[in-house]
Length: 357
Ligand code: BEZ
View 1 (cartoon, helix red, strand yellow):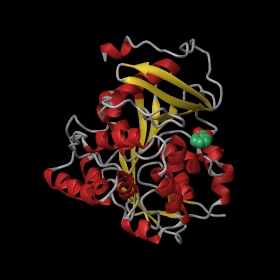
View 2 (cartoon, rainbow, N blue to C red):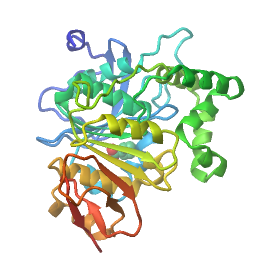
View 3 (cartoon, rainbow, N blue to C red):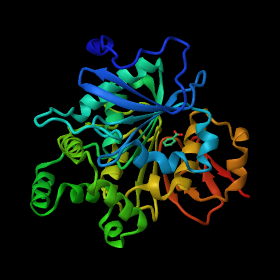
View 4 (cartoon, protein in one colour):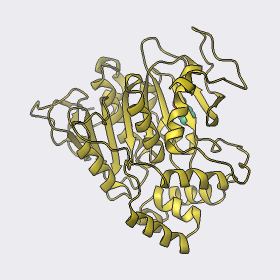
């Protein structure tokens, strides 16, 4: 950490204490591993963490999170938080292609850039939302800086390094598939891809025609070379904050997320498996995710239900909590999406809440 405290901010002056960043302003800071760009929406709220997002490979903060953060019901939540959307190096819109031989940061190094961002913004704590590689980066950051992470929403996390079998499969796929195809296979299920919905077509187009494809390949390589996060239930190497794990039912990373759930502290972890969401629940099911996020925040003591007038009144229930009625906080909560039930998982441990129109 010592070297991170000595980081010099370039391009822009650090904000003075009390100075607030303007809405939707993009900043770049220099870190020991190169420059990182992030965009801040909203203004800091006293005594509230920032929501900090980290996107997956092949995407940037907009292509990964815009549908979620611009979803109607989400507005009532996010207006209470400043948002910091990080673009992995070289993924920001208009990023120049890195020179040949450029040493792209490892995922661990990407995590080590986050303190520079928070120091620059004078933000002390975050609630992280990460997808895929971004979920790994935020988890690594949380392991290294547990006191600064109030909660984590981890979508499609795979905390394990690739084993030799995975490597063999990866190499074989690489013989017949292009990088964009491999990345699309990471983002979407085979069913999604063969269904070729408008969403899949849009993202296929984004990845295939990305002007920074060489940079994307470097982030992809870092993801594939990730170390094991070594989560172990009951050990020191675990996430200490409330965690909401999210994965699509039948989605590419389902098994990894299930295994991850088994290794985290069940009293701190909720597991949301979303039906009909494909590989990218934040794109396909922003409503369901918004609702789950609302309860997650409520469980952390934010967003008292009395403040959530429009969202609470306007939605019929859409989630059930399979392990939420017995008041037993020692089990993890598995939340399975359902379109019929009238119960919703409260953010408070072991309770359900009735919500109706
Ligand atoms: C936000 O309000 O945080 C946001 C808006 C547009 C794109 C991404 C995030």
